[in-house]
Length: 466
Image (tube, rainbow, N blue to C red; front, side):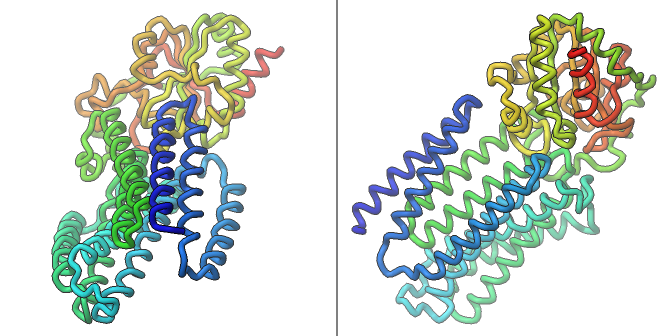
């Protein structure tokens, strides 16, 4: 394929990427946007493979192995495992950029510039930047995966002199990148290259370990952005326009999403990365919660819901753990048939990955128009008869509004406490994933429905069907 046709195809693929990402901004068009972006990537891959002089043997082997692993993984993973799967995908994107950069380094510099690009500063810098960001993304994503999957504790892990080590690694990374731009060739360049690789891996580990589980949605979004930036740098290294564009799109959109989520928590990115929020004992820093949590039965809840004219369902990670989304949808349908107005209130950081609740409810075919954002539902909450909180904790905790000593003070929440009656579905009396006690559960208007969320909602559905 000629260079002109190749670049035209790359431009077409980039346009498809842009339109696809634009459509991801709306729940109603997200699925179509995903397909359009996938079509753009398919076009980019096909025209790249049509370039002359390529060894297709390893390409077919890689394609076959990757297809089998991806297909099996997609089949066996549960919806509750999606956050950690997304974290791993971010990591794989990072390590792929490392391998691309490493291959280019071997091609141009490891033997003293055997292809005649000796001491090309720009090529050297983009190679080492792709290596550093990719290594950081990979190791950080592995730590995020460990926290989300429960293999590493969800609370921040603070090691001795951790911040000092992180600062040293950051300075080492910057110095190594600059040095490699000057001296990419020979044994010295080889040593600097691996110093960058080790520093990136170390910085990813020491950067994510101190971040609490409650902040993992922001971390996943940030790591997604970094994987895009690493891919873009790798694109510059191999002079591939479509990889540059795709990487920049992923990097920018991931960063914008990260900032949106930080705003939803009323925190800046530096606070998320360095505050250690979610540490064990963080709840002790707030005011002592008085009173007790009052349990209710599903029969009691049924009589209240049967008389309700407006119901707001507020899902959280507990709904994902119980895989209760289909039962929740059925309950919502029955409430509507009974004459109630039903909405599903979605907090931007509910769950453990960006858009977690939207994905689950979309899987259950909840109508898009019933999904309401926090800013839209809060003005209506004082007139809502019943708020049903399903496994959510921090995103409905009144301490964010009235307890200045709480670690989440100032964080915008869904104001379930302003509804006339609140039913909270919870497995037990313990604190949430971030370790904070929820003051909502102790209010006089709140009743607790203990047990598995799916079983509880199914019992409510049975009460309505009787």
